[in-house]
Image (cartoon, rainbow over all chains, first blue to last red; front, side, top):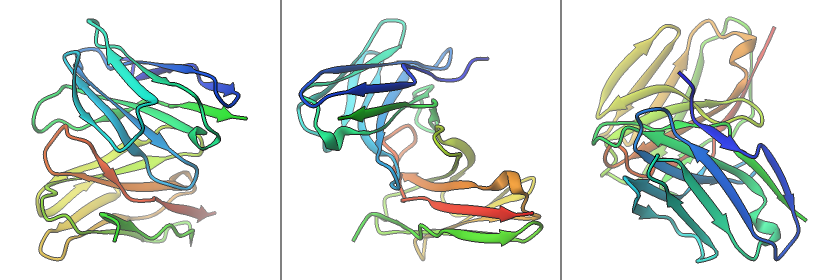
Length: 113
Length: 111
């Protein structure tokens, strides 16, 4: 079975631009979460979606938004990019049940110049 | 005080050594505890998943949770060079809710 997939693998943008990151969960998983991992730090929670509804939002500015599609894939959008947005963006999926844990994709490495 | 504290290391050990990795936390609501392994520039890979207190063993890996002390540990026996990676502890109050991670401990196993 394929794991969580993310695209693109790497991305270079300049300040002020917009970026869209994509995630496909493990087959059968209905919940997707997004995390930001800055170099040398642990991942920080950004959003969680379950059945296309937002389940949770971390402490990130409104420049960050996300959505989940009927096939459970998801997009993370970041507007007005700042240098500090440079990070590894991780997508995790789970079945969505109360005891289920999350499995991570390989991430998208975003560099903002 | 951060919710989850983890010594970032780096930790360097000889091949075959027993490795002990630890995290402390402050939120008594945490009930689900995980250890992830992350190779350089890759996504975290789930190693161990424990609910509440107790021990769990899987091959060379043992996870321990002591909720009374708010302290979790991961032991790696007979460490191998392929174990060289960053180890992240993570926890949550309920399953499938946002994970709170430590900073990660960078481990090097020297052949």
